[in-house]
Length: 256
Image 1: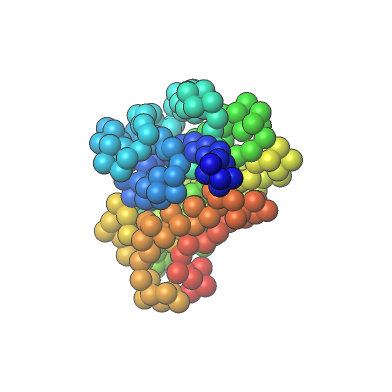
Image 2: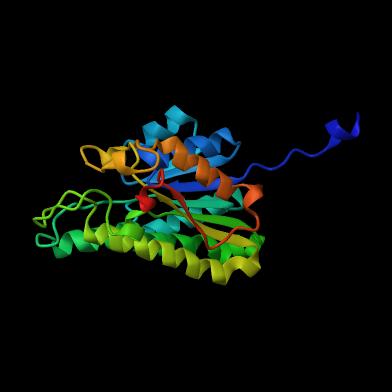
């Protein structure tokens, strides 16, 4: 037996992807599976089980990420089942599109809880004790360029809705700064924390929206697989010295 054949096979990484029953989250899960990772899907939608079977995920769990105890227990269960947790991707999201005049406290709370609060406490559960104890880990939070430019889509001069709403934009801005805060805390433990900020992506959440992409340097909608490629980089070994960053996948939308 030569040295090459005798070399031990690398242990597959264990990844948990929230909001992965469809759209960007599903594409991220597919990419990580293609890269050889053991991937568990987490979503509130009943379809998450069918998605897991269709794309070859290791398992799935149905959880409302706004239920923080249930969310954190799901993170712990995955880590304990496999003896480790290498990658957490927070992709679960909701997006209200009401005008500011019509914005309700219920929509505000839903979008903040889903897009920001759940992200914070999923990261907390992944780090303590799992990633910290193993001395490694990748936290990847899906933000949005909405959190950079104050909502994606043309502004209605009359103040009407349509672009991604105030609560969504606020939550995604918070997600970017939360990621930076966590990165400062966890770097010494061998953990990186980064955000990906998609622009207009052809996904179920974006269906029916008007985004004015003709004015972008790359004048088209992006594809979920293009977001997944950015996540794969941040989850992989080539990003070992990258933390606290926010990678735009937006066709230059923020420049338009």
